[in-house]
Length: 316
Image 1: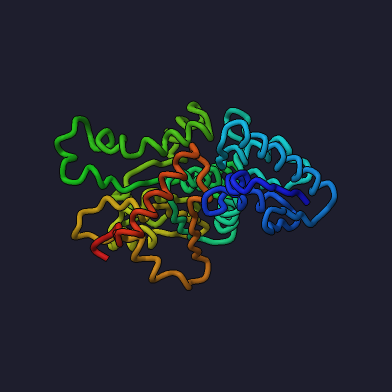
Image 2 (image 1 turned 30 degrees about the vertical axis):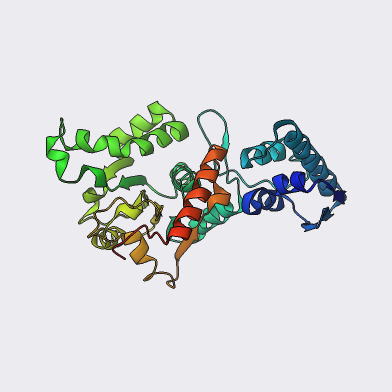
């Protein structure tokens, strides 16, 4: 047991909406209880001792800097990981760094991809939706579970102005696919990525390129799916072939479609949520692993929109 008599210190340790506390709980193999000013730990002696050391280190950090964020929690857990729960690595990137889920929500997301043919990951920016899906895809390719990777995005912002942009069609849409290229460079390295692209093992393309195809032996990722229309979403998910997986990611709070178009990602969640081998995973601000300021921004937007009755997709 640890007693924190300073309630301001305790509140900072817990974090907004108990986000910091949630991270600590996810990493402790026993049970953690907060009762008033006391924190009780139930579990193996080694795990309890490690968690006590971690909490003490975090309290010292709060006293030094006056605040605490999720990245501080993750760093403290990494430094004191012996005896604590550590999620299994999905892949080792080109810099020798293990790619693994960092929150319980991300861990459930990875498990959903392993166990289902189609997974929808819905959540705010910074929750690792796309990057973890791509890590799983690269791992499946390296393990020869699939023969190719197909990654796509809707080029919504281009709209009817594509014809005014310089270059051929591929050059026109490449800027919208750049985030996918960046992730692949990190996971594979530029030379291997280039070789896979030349052989057709990896295809990065706008959503429109999927029409009329059947995608067998493939790991297929649709990113920014909140910007698909109902018709595009139906077209995409019906491309699924044999021995294939699909991961569809998106943030339903950032729909860029015209007012007269409704989001296919919002629409499909009402249709396919009870079908076997299809799973919807909902990530939240607690799963944000970017700059801690991102989590604060998300919470601020949610609070403002809740107070003002704002709806992201006005056509729904």
